[in-house]
Length: 165
Image (tube, rainbow, N blue to C red; front, side, top):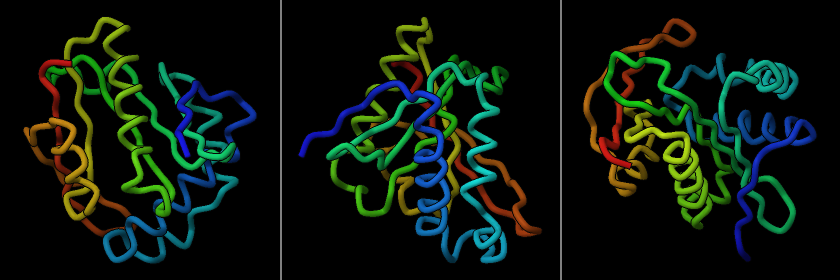
């Protein structure tokens, strides 16, 4: 069962929204407040992704014709950090984690950002997210941290960077 990574099209937005909501509910259970996760909806995430035309790249990953993951990236939204590109989101259905889909998406986005002329990139991940180890396995180096607040709960995020892509 191979993974197909391709550019997303408008017709993919409902599947992207489904992956986004479902992966948040499984990955962040016990980390993000339950009321925040319960309030997530496919419709609101569809609107979010339809409105994010500013991202340079939005890629999906399919296995057996079903979209089970996605990644987005663009120029760094925080250029003061010193990195050119940014992975703004990467989410997979729980059933696809550890099966090579994340690596395929990550490698494809790295190549896209590199083709855009970026020499480096970064991303943010919740410190309590067990999947954060994926970024170290991809060669990322933790370089900073910050606190965000979701549903009144402060959450620590780690910044990972690839100084050379």
